[in-house]
Image (cartoon, rainbow, N blue to C red; front, side, top):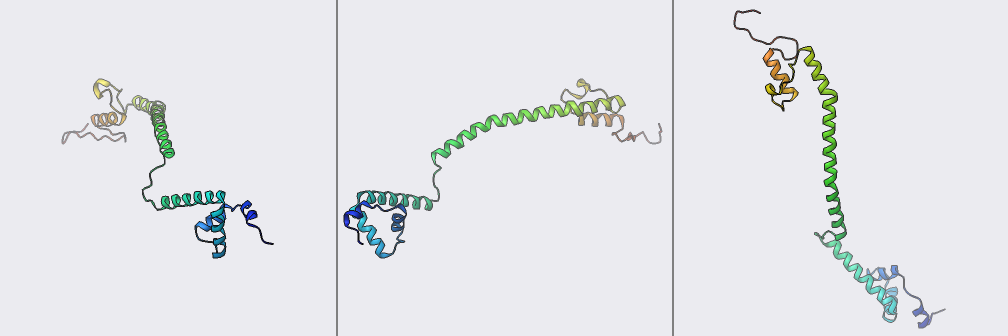
Length: 163
């Protein structure tokens, strides 16, 4: 049973058929039907034009090598950059807290035990400088006393003299 032209006008084409028509994927007979229908049906012609425009834009976007960053992504990137500033401050603050805790819980008690055992002289800021680190103090004290912490005297006596 054949449809009349008025019945065909009430039956609109779907997007997939129109996309296949745009890409020339329909057989010749079906392509001619779609072409005839879109010439007479305003709704399908409008949809066909919109799909053609979208297809051209997508094809052009895929072929562009230096496509600009969409503004929505640029805004997200800027927000992420701003949020990273406070994150880095937090990271450095936690790192400083960790270094202080490490020094006060492990290094300082160890240094005090070395001082009590006689391996290190008491830390004197006037002698070693206010910012002298443990390594510098140990090395200077070891060199001054002739002992580098291994229990062996490394002091050199003048030739022929014994202690």
